[in-house]
Length: 268
Image (cartoon, rainbow, N blue to C red; front, side, top):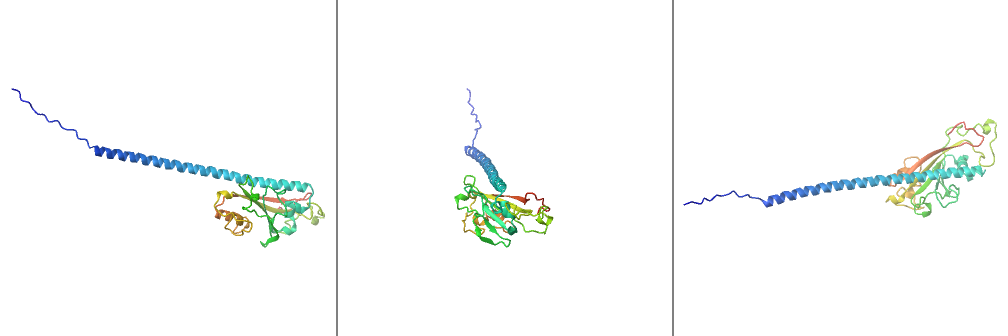
């Protein structure tokens, strides 16, 4: 008679709860990695966009400044060739003896027939006092007529006539002190060798949260007020726009007026 023997097999025990917890941790880690990679990608895209936008803005401002300088120089050459009176041209106006130490500003207004006109300038004398009879040149960001580049940019030009530092600063070989009488009529009338400095500043108000201001604004808390600041000293047009975080660009150009038939002894 055969006897049956009971054999006990070891049972395989699986903890489903432990496996589920491990899978959850792995999934969470993967999600965290995806979020980190996504955040880095978004930040990189944002940085690239800002760099691209800044580059486009810089190009736009440079083109506006360059166009203003080319236009005012071309206009001055044409008017000078036509033998107009000296006050009709920027070169003649700035070279007048009474302009020494003065600063003349005007807005680049595309609808104006002339870029430089003594009827549309703001002039500051050597004592930094604004001449009340000539206060129509500062740009007004609140006026659509003062915008260029399809209404996106405001451009203002300022020309500074430094005060003479030497008695020979305006001397020329064709001047009266060299036994040659200067011209008495036309664009070269009573004009010696003079130097004046041109500044052109363009801004994009739409890319700033700074207040625009208007024609009556006079402080440093608005874009309009910044345009009325000095070109030299502690508070300037540039420092004001920088403080307001306004995108801008300034170019500087030095001009030497050498009348026809005159060789300038000094360039300052």
